[in-house]
Length: 156
Image 1 (cartoon, rainbow, N blue to C red):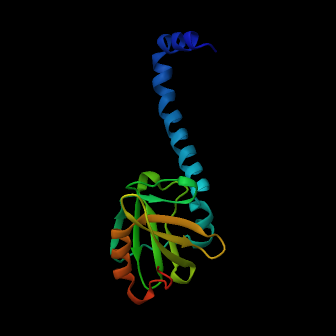
Image 2 (cartoon, one colour):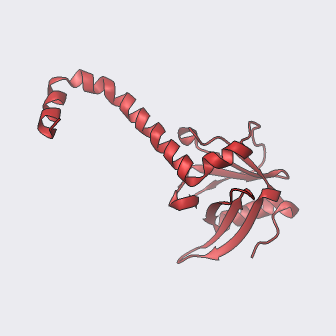
């Protein structure tokens, strides 16, 4: 359908367009959320580490986080540390295909790196999966304090 005729159709049927657009938007939102989960590795982690138990400890909103293949989760991930492990949840609007995770500390490796402007900490999640989660150094340091002696050794 050429662009002119599509625009003409929308102009002639505004009620149809208004009724269909919300479904289109929701379908697109769910598709993008699914792709990000699959590409970034959250879906793979959820197969093993999904939790239904609500986290009761101190939580930190991660301002900027990055997972596998440059998938970014800016201001949508909340992390917590407990004796059991690293807790990760996503904001409600981004929860589709991103269930809450509890990754035991035995399945987490930690490595510090320097970027252009910031220091980062990269968590490698899951021994078999090795999914990276990179966050800035300050939130990682807060998580380290919360985790205490359970924090993974190998922090360089």
